[in-house]
Image (cartoon, rainbow, N blue to C red; front, side, top):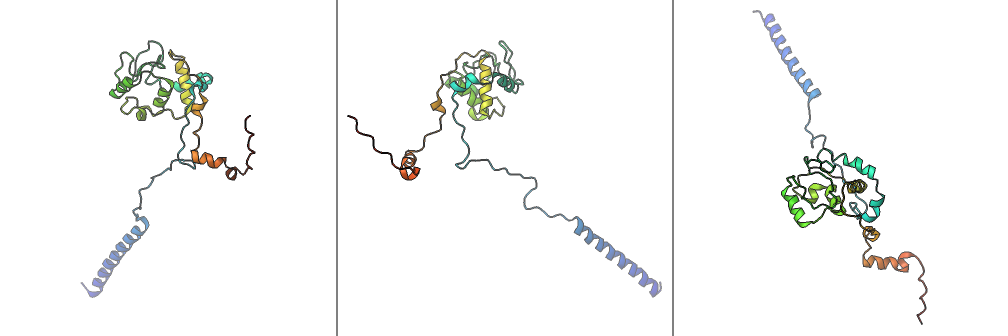
Length: 216
């Protein structure tokens, strides 16, 4: 092989090697990926809270709200329960017990249904499903009675629970609506010190009221 031929072959090999290296570097530059500091699609949602912290649900005055509740709306809410419960008198048990006459019934007492140990224990301590107990349970079953078989996430809206319980009451409910008690649902009174400060003229911006004449 002449020197000229050898130089041509060597040059071709060198050019090919440089082309391969160049293409590899170019490809890495275009398609390289960098590891993210945090995994993608992690969305954090802050819990909503008022100026003083998370909102606290006010107590429900059952004697006031039940007589004016929307029974038809409560029946519509019960549609969420039909996959597990029947509501007709003498209806069969499903995944959950039949709910005829549930309002006023002793917890864990419906014949033929195998209750969880947690519900049986709850029934031993609570003589009756009244409106308050039912409301707390259906708001968050797993939280109210840990270990219950009821896997329903719960009804968070008070109006849904009010309407549902008004509807359930028409289905064999054995206890009457309680008497109205607006004071039970009133906002908590301010602390004594805060109330005293609010009552002073400096706090209210009002002139002090004249003293009342002594009784004679």
